[in-house]
Length: 462
Ligand SMILES: [Zn+2]
Image (tube, rainbow, N blue to C red; front, top):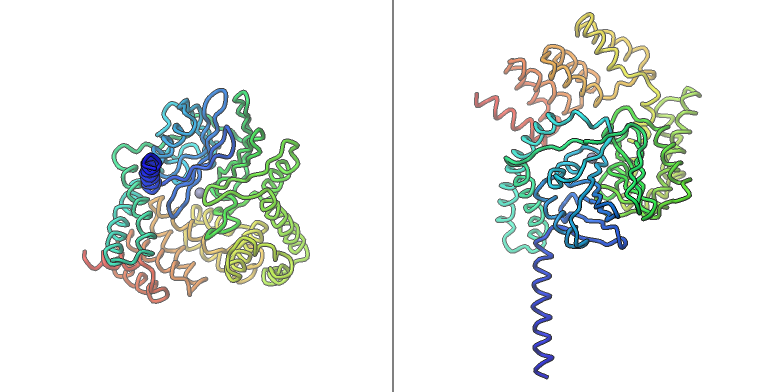
């Protein structure tokens, strides 16, 4: 009796210890097989990394967004595998939340797509911004925590986020070093690790410009980075203006026709997908792309295309992704628009060229005429024009940026973001009065524009 009581006590203590270490370690470890682990960060972003123990060493796919987080993941991998011979780190793409933990595996060789090379300086710059924002965020969250008082739900929500931001701050302080790929490839690459091989495919321009898929046939795993995500993200997560849709279809077809196959799809965040779910997306993309090309040949307008692809009738199965009906409709409309844009001529190229040869006024005048006469044939999308404006700014040409942002305001007079950009360009040009006026207009259109508030405060202080 006594003995079993003591045994129980020991069990209890072990359990408590385990639960505590579980709650302070922000990583969920899932064993997919003898050789493969899936590790998920317990944070609002739920970053996923995959580790495979092969005969020739451990291969890690992605490295989270902070060396501080990656160090915790590294320990968890070492513990699970009881070895630490890290050989390769493969980055699905170079975004911070996937590649900024690379330095934690200094003995490993980093592999990534060739388009991700040459971003080190830019990454170091954005790390500084991220560090500043992270510090501000920690302070704001801690104030929120104080306000939450005894509200257990609020606390449970805030604590992991505070810890997450603290890891970003800790990891991006003095010792942060971006580690670019030492091995890169253009279209496909096979990494032979003896018992396990990794087939790497460039997916084409989609989310980052250098997105790759990693197929591990021996484990029946396909790692897809940020191309397909759900729960709070765009299902078709295309961040780029120019999309290589035929290339996406080619890669997806190759993978689905591969006799070695895959059964589990592991995205860069949240949770694993089934093969069927990815198949659903493949069909959605193919149907939409074929249909939109046909519509273009029939000379339909964008509005008619939207009508031709009502979500309710053709893509009802998207509901399985767990978003609200309204959000799914928004995603769908955005996808159609992005696909449609691929068939248009980008007006930004013409504006950029004309600015170089004849100045911004002539360029805007050309744009204005095309907007009036040939609007349907050209891509006048606001984000692409906005990006060109920022390119002008980064090329130390604020007057061209002012001219272009003013043109965007003309085309999209209800856009708070357009006024915000115009305000920024005036600020860079040193025209305080016009900067204030445009930031105020932006706030008028969107009272929640925090950037405009901050900038106005700064402009009024000086
Ligand atoms: Zn990303």
